[in-house]
Image (cartoon, rainbow, N blue to C red; front, side, top):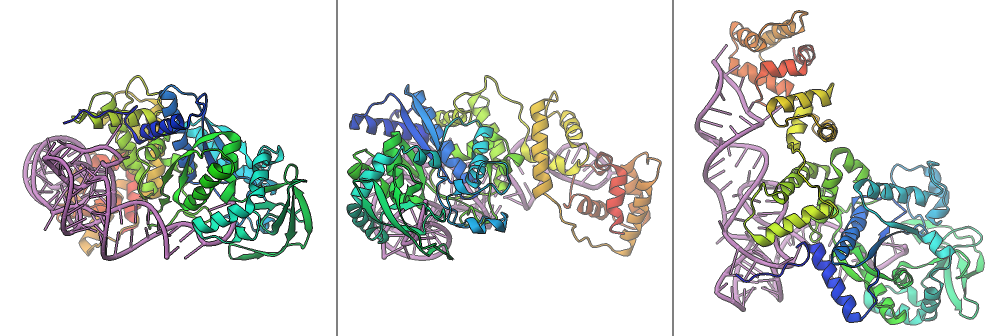
Length: 528
RNA sequence: GGGUCUAUGGCGCAGCCAGGUAGCGCACCGGACUUUUAAUCCGGUUGUCAAGGGUCCGAAUCCCUUUAGACCCGCCA
């Protein structure tokens, strides 16, 4: 077998960073600060895919630093984009703001300076919670400060050439007719309704007419205003097909990942950066969308949104990072039900890292250790944490609904799973408990009971509900079954079905005391 | 019309991007424990890695062709 050369820490992130470096070197660009970027949508509720874009870009930054280069992550909010649809669960009062830049729409919840900032903040909060550091920039400021004006000027001067190229590359015709620039109508504050038809290069002004436009399936009324927008001062923005290029050039961006849904835009932007702006486009990596379990795209405007915040109710920050760093290729169907295996997989990686699990293949060992380091943002702990199987916690949490943390902890100590109660375990019990409440809710199963079984059950309910604690619950149950002509085996099965929703379970006497005998009596009485 | 992804035990999936003994969970079977009872512990069964070709000492993995399914783009951002 040939010795393979292992790049960096052996993960796809290292390989990507190394390709990037090689490209930069062959371009002969300055490598003092290799800036990477992640775009955040500000129109809808940011889901785990948006988070992934930033988390992965941060991974590339870490890899570059690991190779000895300086690198920054810019998190850029597209908050000058217009609102096209009201997201699920948001008030209808937003209707009047359709097509306005999201940074000019008031926050319907009143907690941020705008609707756009409200949305971006959800994502930034997610990044903070998983430990990602970034420099935040927003489109509204970028344009207000005129940071892109040179690029806008160049792009508008070449708009005919660009329009033709867009048509050639992706088959979109509209920019042969209109400029790739959307002014915000000075009269009604709307984007998209104001169509730019002419660029007066000497004055750096765009002529526009505000008229009706179809956005999504909705018609948005234009106000008929005719105006001129100064690209250095007035509000307006480049179309997406050319905007990235302008930003890359202005901010000197060397890397940006993108989802396959904007593949075409990236293709055009790469060309614009290279050929029109004279700025070699950043290195890219394409990733697949996260789909929900039915195979549908997770849409920001639909209800099936997995946000970082929701995920963190059930899983640790490291489980999020593991999901995003373990691989980038391939379509992913994602749901909260993936959390338990990711939680356990992290423990397994930790065991490999600390040498408790042996891996023979050297390349795979390096890769697993590397992945562990990235999940810890290249700052791995000095020693392993205490591991508790997440699924076990969910099972225990199902049994103990009151005083959960305390009682589950006690069980873990009894089982010998842990030696000491630790705060980290408390946290684990909490999130596993959330998971159990939300997803492991047992339905009231239909249980077939004949007359003698019903009678036996009734006697048992009375016995359990009595003020005096029966001496030996296990034996009591056994005796009740026998004296009522019920096969003990069947009777136990019935009890498990009612209590746990399964046909088997742990020794039932202790289980009933664990849950609380009166509680059990109440549950059982519903079947008599 | 253009593009991308996916196909691996009964079911759900990992492994593929950097080729080296086909793995995990559930299910199933056996055992431990028990006057009946495992969610625990130990052991076990289950595979033409979609089909065909190529490269290689060696292919689930890389390349080409085919089939089936899903998704994205062709409004907009």
